[in-house]
Amino acid sequence: NGPALAIRVRKHIQASLPNDSGLAIEKIGNLRRKLRSVDNDVRNANKRMPWMSYICKNWPLEHLAHLSAEQMEKLVTNYQADFSYLPNASDFVARGKGKIIMIGAGLGDPELLTMKAHRMLQEAD
Image 1 (cartoon, rainbow, N blue to C red):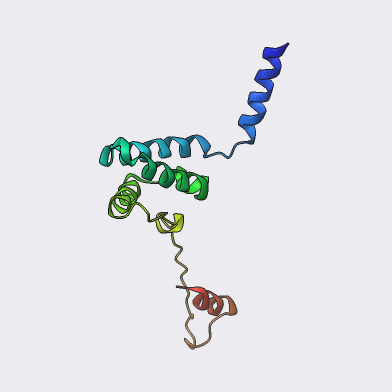
Image 2: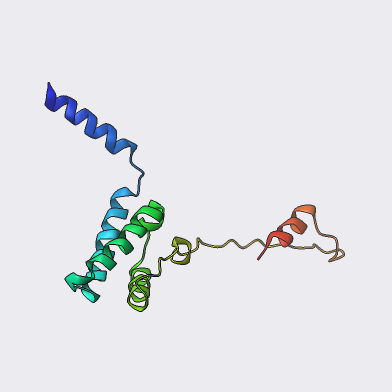
């Protein structure tokens, strides 16, 4: 029963892939198309391919999966300015949402904060 085994192996491989794999592949395809739209000279393939390979090999899948159109434009613009520049993923990934913590000193002395309030103030940026 070769086909049944092949289906089982495919499902096993599929289940072991990170959740964002499909989205990352889609985004890389979009980035590649954008890059080729600004540099479609066949003679420049030796520049484009290593640049794209660097991103594919070195950027985490979750970063690739969440690239926005604006971030892709920035990447392509940087490539146009200097194709030898190899971008760092952390420079192109949007930061997560921040957190607001309300701290009150109560009706008494404003210098009397709880230990937790003091710690939160120390950790704030």
